[in-house]
Length: 124
Length: 109
Image (cartoon, rainbow over all chains, first blue to last red; front, side):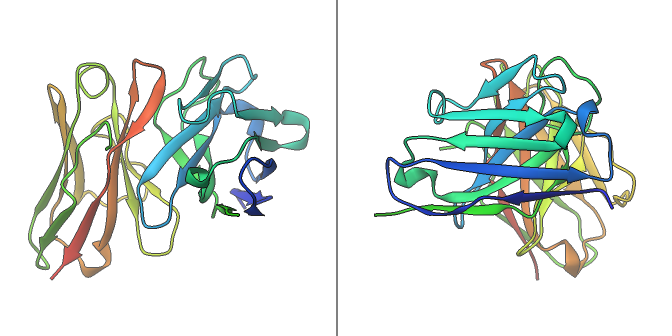
């Protein structure tokens, strides 16, 4: 089955760190750029970070730049998001998403496969 | 405040046509492809329209997308009760990030 499964969310204090994982299956993971997109409770969608198929290009939203690190391991069909210096405003459901296109050298807004998300709550 | 502006709500009765707008700028909608997502209650977003006016396989032709200048639109014809949910537009912005609209909550009366 073609799917993405996120894990690693939880309750964390401000200033602490957390690492999210996304396990891909049912498709050739290394062919696609991958992204993290978050959704605060009752709010809209926010692009967090993206990484191209070969990790050649990595990008971040201004709101997380310098604090979050996206990475991937194509041998393990996995995507990661290391989140440092967490803030209250990082509280959200974090989705892993696949790029519609193959072997792109940059990013776009074409997310054709989404996981169910993993919830991150930042609270003291 | 989202970079892309969508109406917060829209509504229609079964069978009607509803149009949702997405207003941006020359650095996003005006120069790049627009994508639309449908998020039904309690579910992850689903790609509805790609490359401004293309439908992924499995998406009914009741859904259509268009763009003019720095504004894009999603039209839903023959409205069904199961279309009720949130709709988001998204575009790559030349400032090097993906930007989303704030979302439009569609109610089928």
